[in-house]
Figure 1 (cartoon, rainbow, N blue to C red):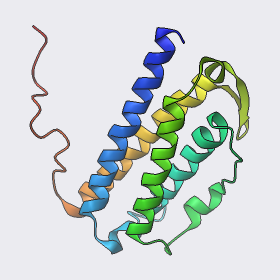
Figure 2 (figure 1 turned 30 degrees about the vertical axis):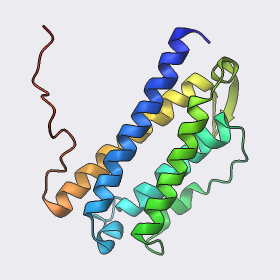
Figure 3 (figure 1 turned 135 degrees about the vertical axis):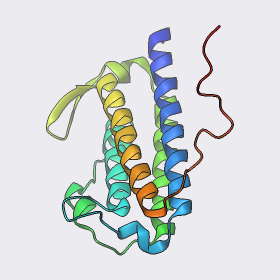
Figure 4 (figure 1 turned 45 degrees about the horizontal axis):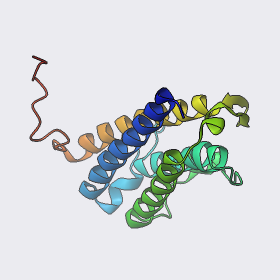
Length: 168
């Protein structure tokens, strides 16, 4: 495998890990009833965001890149109003991300180049990997924002890091 493909795989894996950790911190800070609170009728609860992330990761990574059957029911990710506890959602999310990370780390060059249908699109494995990683990051930001709105607390993602340090 060429070095660019290796770098892409490693960076996407690392972003999966970083986003997973941020979301798990959010979930650990939330009360059970916070999971299904919606900021307004046009927005989704964190529970919906979690189901949506699991569905998207399963469809794009586990089904498409991992060549497993696609059983996603996307509409249910948004229409669900309750029925999953914080613990159930946390477990589903952690298990889904772990399975996806293993598939990503074990990707081979031909899978990155293979073109396949996903939803209504036809995409290469590289396209799939970039899409699912940016989609994960996008919804992580939404979950972090809504968590901070609910609990009014710094989540400490960068505690101990000097983010103002410049290269010398």
